[in-house]
Image (cartoon, rainbow, N blue to C red; front, side, top):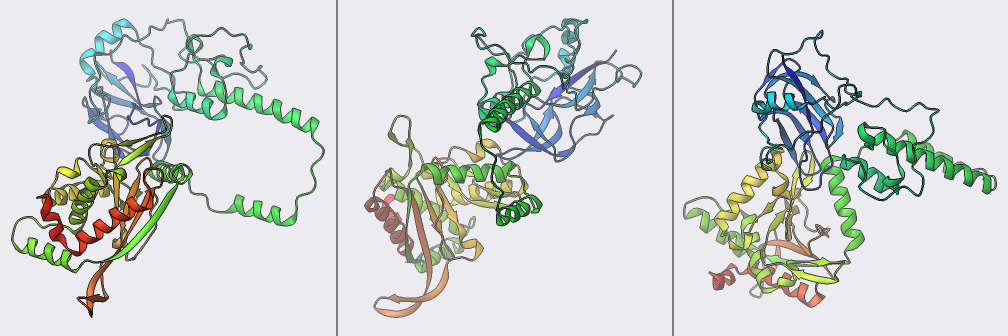
Length: 465
């Protein structure tokens, strides 16, 4: 007889606690193989395909496309080890119940050959599966939801210290955000497990008590002005766009950057005529074509070797500046799902040809939505080519926790004094936003001036070859 196993949304790494279902790759009744991708999800980092560690027949799916699920929530159930269960044999649990499947030692043995142990393709394979907790057959699969009139499940203040029975990282996050001590909550799940509903019930009860106390102590509020009422009406009826996924991650990072980093910006116009001529000569010589972005990246890494203060981060807890040994160069890429910043590893050790190839690979992955969290983290300095949008200048926001970002505008013909005469030259505006904690304006200006010198006279780079 088939065993119906539940596959839950795995830990996707990088501290991610939820993901949005973008597209189901299987339907109920489909036969799936071990490690076959079954659903495409979008996290705050990237779009990924989630493989199922079981082989068998899909008996249920949990969540429609567009639904956001926390890590550990059920994704689907699979019948393994025999013929698929029919409606009369084993009904799939409802998505809203999300009840854990009953697992016994014999069931583990029966399906061990149908389980790969993989958490997520590309993020490593788990070790031998730990023995699952046995559930007595006379124990209900899920505790019933508490009645509305039931007292709030709060533990008395003198509850003994010890490990808190919480599995879900989302439950811990909700409690932390709401300022709730989980030791003061009595779980309604199996063996006292604290569920999300327990936390929400406790928070609601606490807020009701606080509101009741405030209402009793505070005088009656005055009538709100008409303008405030009109503003509130607009806020309620206006279009609302959820800040989640990639957009939410970008918003959080930019807000944190502006909150924590005392940034300053300096800029300079540079004559890029010789740089464009050098690129044309390189491409005319044969071999893979060299991109302008790769040449600018090569200039950046050369300048960072002379001004290492800008390839650093600030450890606020230790009150120290950490100068980083390698340059992992991020570059801004606009996609249909929003702005992402892929990272070129060890950019300082790459030549222009290698940089061109890596930029092309990461850009294509960004457009396809196949970047992994590893492709999007670990940057030490960011190069932002906003000239592709047809603009000349900008004041970039630093990609926290980095210390600087170089912005590059469009390269266009402009009047320029060259060798004492007015001429039409290819001019570009360069802007540097830097963390004023890691260096002063003299260092930042020296870095930017060196970049401009290399743009105007690329032969300066020959000293390092």
